[in-house]
Image (cartoon, rainbow, N blue to C red; front, side, top):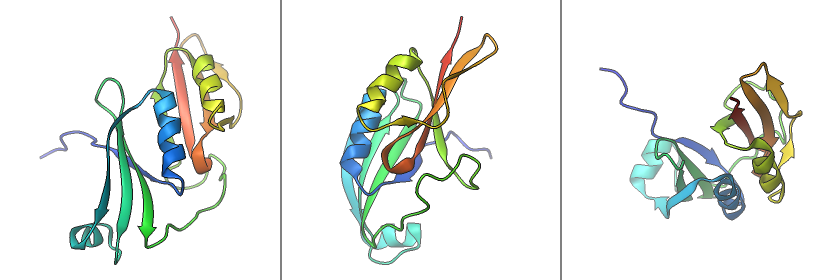
Length: 145
């Protein structure tokens, strides 16, 4: 048996509303918000007393989803602030975009900053990484031609 699909990527934030606004500006669509708690949540994530607010967002094509979460209890644990790109572990989510300069400009209104610079790979792509809410790195790729 193989996997059916990748269902979603989860990211924990302290300011869930700011994270939702950022990803909506990027072009994702809000599927819904909910609070998760109780014994099933505790057993699934291996913590006791879980109370977590989540927002589920999807890409416009319906194939990609992000689950954004804010832990009420137990409190979220902050990692290193703005770790470099070569830090071990999951550190970015990449999106294909139509107009990379427009997307960067719109995300800057939500506090995003370029990690490096906007670069072009051969005649194929324009690429960049931006630091979004609470330091999460979001990759953007515009296919050329």
